[in-house]
Length: 279
Image (cartoon, rainbow, N blue to C red; front, top):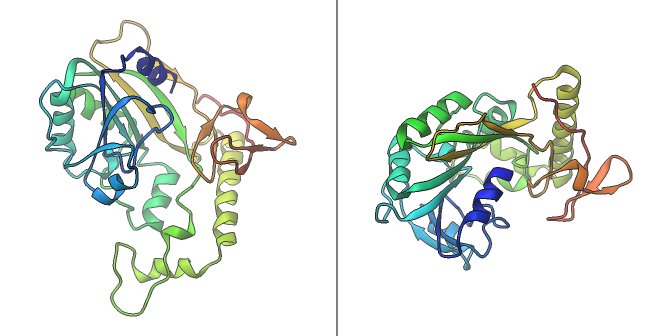
């Protein structure tokens, strides 16, 4: 999101960023070498990134003083939180009066999110957002105002064998029931083929019928001052790597022949799709 990049470029090295619900770290390339403190409830996820200054805590009970952070980042995390209202209040508390907020969430009505919930039995998504509900919840709970948005697209990266472990005999640990665990017996090539088919089929349908099957959700930027100019609505990237999930501008990719490109982040080969239409 260009607006987020602009905001980050304005921050001084001493100014603090809170990465809320960070796992092992969010937006690693954009937040690299910045003063970031990550918060997650899973200590094992925090330990996966020794370079991250991580704190194990609940999102609705943050162990920080008020007016501590210059920016808060919630990257694919709000949909996992049971205490959403209390978490949004905590974000307002720990943000400085001039602080800014970046949020990315899935569209709970999208084909991608519904497929994710079916295959992974919810997959930890306890909130089901639409654009209006998430914007209203954040604006009313923080007093911030929506400054910009970007439509995000999916690569169906969750259709991966690692998410479907074969089921042993006896009681099953974890959230997946036995009817889903059998998928773990399939070879990797099956998941690769299904993921490729989903990417091609949804984007072709979008191009022909102007649907939104390949949409994932939105990136949203909130600022303390009410905008005096029209909302910044940025064009999203339809080309999203099926291996690492990186979204790429079609004009800047390293093309292989006409319909393929190599992801600069993970070096995997993907199909190259045309840019999305504005609906």
